[in-house]
Amino acid sequence: MTLDPYAHDHTNIEDITWSHLGELLKQAAEIVFKDWRPEIIVGISKGGVIPAVFLSSAFRLDFFPIKLSSRHNEEIVSQEPIWYVYPTEHVRGKKVLIVDDICIAGRTLNMATEELRKLGAKEIRTFTLAVHEDSIRPDYVVLVTDALIIWPWDRDILTSEGKWEINPEYLEEMNTISGFLQSNNSKKLTD
Image (cartoon, rainbow, N blue to C red):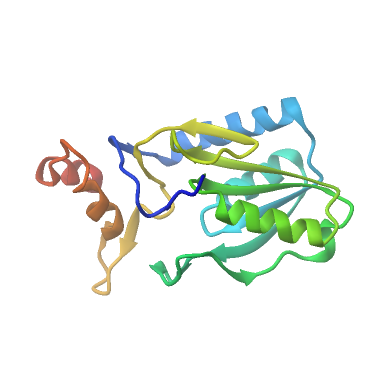
């Protein structure tokens, strides 16, 4: 199954607050802890870094970031993910949990898993905070929704004029959701 991560419909909007994110992260730690004990946490930058840092702190483990993305400076530059920062040899012989914010087609998780195998990781499992109903599923996930997920770390941007506003990429996507009226809802999102 091949999914285009940039061609999917959302049913509504899930505006995740920092407080709600904290609850999701605690659930994530408990889900993984009940099933498995990683030895290293690898977070896929950018969206996977915050949950990965939380999990590494919760489990008292080392955290290592990697950058694997179709974006550069928030602009889509490639249809396929590009390696910017590779994993290190620290994964050799270790049980590694790869963490990202969302999985749709599984491309970044698959590429990261393949690279960690090459480096000699003993066992690799994957975790994302969210997936859509038709998404490829990681080993662990907390939230299954077809909503447009607005993450708190990139919900707002600082404009060139020095003003905060909701990320225009989110606003553009919101306008494609059936029943969403920007004039009624964008104020709520920007208050």
